[in-house]
Amino acid sequence: MAATAFLKGLGLGGSLIVAIGSQNAYLLRQALKREFVLTCVAVCVVCDMALIAAGVAGMGQLITGVPALLWWLKLGGAAFLLAYGWRAARSALRPAALVAGDGATVASRGAVVAAMLTFTLLNPHVYLDVILLGSIGGQQAGNGRLYFAAGAMAASLAWFSGLGWGARYLAPVFALPRAWQVLDGVIAVVMWTIAASLLV
Figure 1 (spheres, one colour):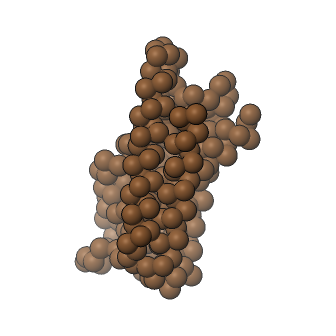
Figure 2: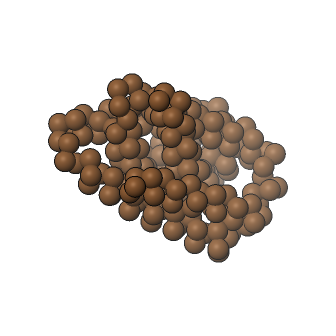
């Protein structure tokens, strides 16, 4: 059960976090410039882990207190995953290279932290992801919630670390629309598979 919960958290967390967005674009941009990469990765990972823990803990308690919410959470989670998968599939059919926003060169570590926090915490989609992770994590029995959260956190750590320090090697690949097309296609399949498991 522990391995299953961990892998479920790893799969769902990974699928949600690799979607193209402002946070990943900014991190990639900083990584390509090799400016405060460790700082950027640390901010992303710490914020993500805190949000995942809060989501799983809060939603788990809510489900325990109101069992009837479980059905609605499953239905809502499945609907969100289907929509998210559709968005990824549409991106796969209409690929475009990822281009981090242009802007002035960041002069200080504080400015980089402020920008990274803005991209991370002021993005409404991050809270939808937390709610989804919390609703599914809350369904895990016993310590399964902890393993699910650990899996999602592991996905976060692996993705942000890989993106931060692997960007210099991946840049030529992900400058091509085809690379994002394949990635978005995989994300769509994973999302739809998890949605189906919630409805069965």
